[in-house]
Image (cartoon, rainbow, N blue to C red; front, side, top):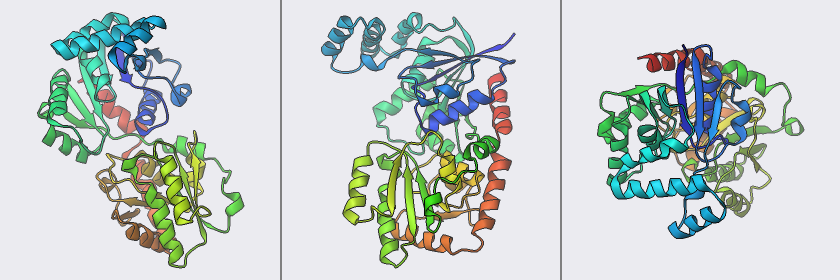
Length: 389
């Protein structure tokens, strides 16, 4: 008999957490597992990459949020009865404790019981698994590189995590942060890194250079969500410093979208570097842009692991990364360039990397790092072992 698995996540839009989830679902052995995927916010771009063996269940909780009476009125008028019930259950949870979330069970349309239920994010996903899903084992994933919770929020997560057998995180640095902050993690935190499918990434990168019209210039690329913690505005400042220092034979592309896009574009325009720094928006397949770039620069101050850097390493694109918890576990002087947060450090390291003869040697070493430590078979073996514990 197959092992019944449930994964719960918000959505399948483009993002590191969602990419990680899709990779796991693509590599599971469906002769061994019967898998449901519950989405509570939306479907999204990655849905088409989900294997056909996965049963996707979508319940829209987003319509349940907002001012109480206006939300209730809207739900009634629009006959959004799931959202209406969900809102009332959330209210009871606030009044009487999270245990009342079991009232969601009948409207989630899931199996009566699972062998293992996995919340792929903390928060509402974990609350649903903890209180509204019946399973022999419950696991919660943690992907974040920092903790920004007050005491009340921390206490709430601790209460929820008491219902979980294990908390999985993607790096040893994350594990230490969790164990120091959450008492409920004691003795049950496990590290399972995100997988990097080198063969798939290489195939998707292809052989067509998207920068063919700018072959005479050094191509730099930054890939990431345009949100405050990623500090992608530093691309513009670093580019400005490079130009002012006399190096102007480059174009720096930014792939991604997010709430900071307008602010970043304004910074680019204000600094007068719009001919050098170009926002390309989201790309469903960013790999050609990474493969054919001369350098990838990652400016984020906080990373639990960073799939983007590992993917660039897999494509043998030299990487310059701001020092944060995740990259420091696998990057060093032999396979990349770790820099401090300040713009001068980024610009100076770019000068060095562009003119560094060992740069390609570093790139080859980076490839070996990824291939030997983050292969799908290795990661799935760890997951299988956890599920069957």
